[in-house]
Image 1 (spheres, rainbow, N blue to C red):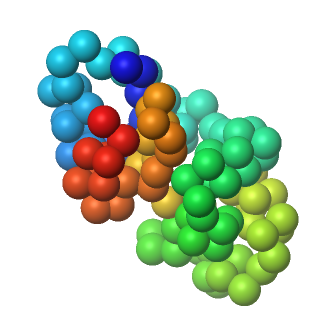
Image 2 (image 1 turned 90 degrees about the vertical axis):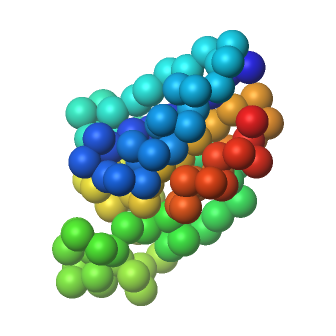
Length: 114
């Protein structure tokens, strides 16, 4: 099985999710440090859609200025534009496996993808 995690090492939930993935036997794991290698707009849109979310549901407000910028009330298209311009606006961690995609917050949600 293959898995990709969009990871932020400063995030406890992201670290715990990565640890779960690293302990899965025979898992081909790709780790993308999305703050260093940002999403394109189409990538984040595809990931959010595959996870069954609306852009607003994947918007990270805590620790960002997204709310002050009005993104919590913005259109989905405007939120995706902002996420592509500033990956810190994306909630974390997202994981994609052969079984689908999910925002793994809390980290135990990753088990549904394994």
